[in-house]
Length: 112
Image 1: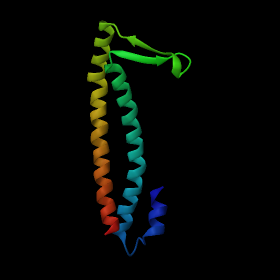
Image 2: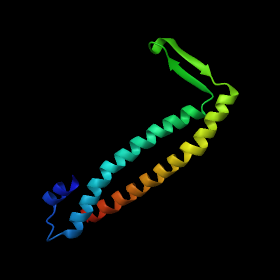
Image 3: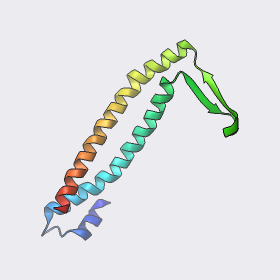
Image 4: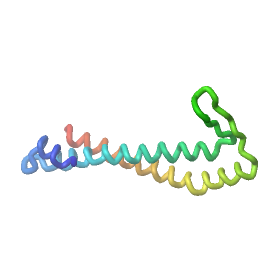
């Protein structure tokens, strides 16, 4: 999807470096949004599992309830969060950082 836009912006024969860097930048933006959405979703789950209380609403904002997790369930949830979800969050963070670095490098090549 980024190739047609890059082809309209830069001539492949005259500026191959700018064409490739613009294509990489365009592809990185879409992939970066996907990684960001995954990271935000899994971090929400991680926070819910680590929290000792759960706040929920039955029918609307005005009748929210607070539920305290039993100690056994809290321990199980924290084990799941630390051993299954935290490595995934670290991996998503490192992939997102790599995509951001690639985006900055490719945009700097395309601009200059």
